[in-house]
Length: 78
Image (spheres, helix red, strand yellow):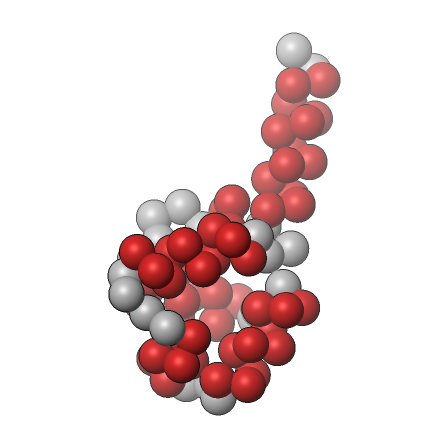
């Protein structure tokens, strides 16, 4: 699931508004808004966003739940 706060921070670091990012990845602003609310993007969209926003570690942003679960499991096995 998407970490909306981190996603918006990544946009802000690069100076992108939702409208600008939507245009850069080829979707409407409404579509981008809906995807952010739902927290679900296709792999092609994630790839484009990572490239446009120059995100070096997309895991914590796009897979926040999975990263948290992995960290919890890793800690439990120590």
